[in-house]
Image (tube, chains in turn green, red):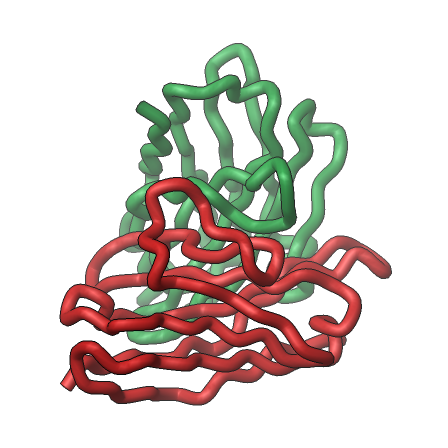
Length: 119
Length: 109
């Protein structure tokens, strides 16, 4: 069964850092690009970042560029999101998601991990 | 930069047809995708490449495209279809960017 399981969320003060993890199972992890997508409470979906199957290519939204780093460890089937200089507007549920290979869609989503940035 | 625009809400009675639209200039050159998100759950892909349906998605879900607009059509709406629906596209003309519409809340009366 294809599964993505996020962890690492929590409450953090503005300006601090946090690292999210996403453990994948049930599919060939090395074969897929992976995304982070977030959703602020009561709001819509916002794409955050994408990494290629081997991790050599990374893309970011303008909102997080320079503060967030997406990475992956293919030996551990794990995706990461390192977040620094967090802001209150970064408060959201963060989803790990798999790129849909025949298209630019996202075909598998985790259940998300909640990050709350508050003093 | 590109944007995707959706109407905030659509309401239909059970058995009727719901049409949800998404507009944006990027859609004239890139495919549109649709996700269903029920309350408290993760999104689910229901349409990709404008009009293709992933396995396991009921046939009552269909998609179409015309110019700068993509449309998600739900025929014979059921109570279980009540959800938020998001459109999505991708811009690879510069740094790769994934775009989401603001979402449309479908209410089944």
